[in-house]
Image (cartoon, rainbow, N blue to C red):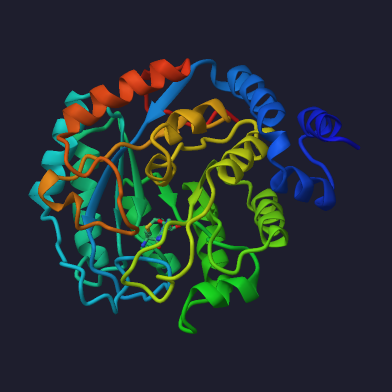
Length: 345
Ligand code: SAH
């Protein structure tokens, strides 16, 4: 089958064989047919609406040592910070005024924030902003902790599986971490009742196309509400300093493939995509993404949450980011809406 036929099959059936996925992932000639098909699907489900999520990067301390990540424990060059409850709440206040109805608290796995502290912050946000979604992205925890955050008022959780191949997982993470535990977390979160987001990096060291096919197959098993992907981007103060970053077009094709396989999914056009290309996020939207996640963190800490190098939007106030993004989304042919932005399944 040629590329257009495979794209049509994926459009019609929402699935193709592993070999067909492999050829779609690997070939630049499928960029346009895939993006066109994905845009039809996204408009069927979400029209021209783009949901925004206010990202609050509240700590860059981390007990983990992932080889790709700039805030890994052993990066002694990282200047560490934590936001107080009051600082987090004032980010939410400002975000709410700017039209955000989802707050995402993301951070390293920082033991300073005990379950009690997280629950206290979450329940305060919940009572002040009853019409908003609260998303947590704070890594792997015991099931009881996820349950406690949920009971305190959190309703979404982002935890990328990073790679669904356990051998590849072992090349990206130290022995203290496992794909098995990552998956356990994701299924626990689903069972508790969270809207769950997973995803993976594109072009991470040692990644092969077969691994990406496995990522798609794992997502079919998990059936997440949200799927976040972005290019791997090198950071000099990690063991992977010598590896090159992931590619724009491969990431865009994968966004389109995701839209065709998971028509209902909430798919962000990520900051990492915007970092490797000046119009990366616009291109991500045109390829099938329907969410953007601008930064609500205080400007004073933004540069410090450096998962990778040259991260964009680290110098601007939230209101400026919001305005800039508004224009970018319009230029791509979509519009930002003030909405909690739940999944349409
Ligand atoms: N501690 C939380 C949040 C991690 S940061 C957790 O474990 O989920 C959010 C995402 O950034 C990670 O899941 C990873 O996919 C991505 N990331 C980390 N380092 C990166 C890098 N060097 N390039 C691109 N993405 C990266």
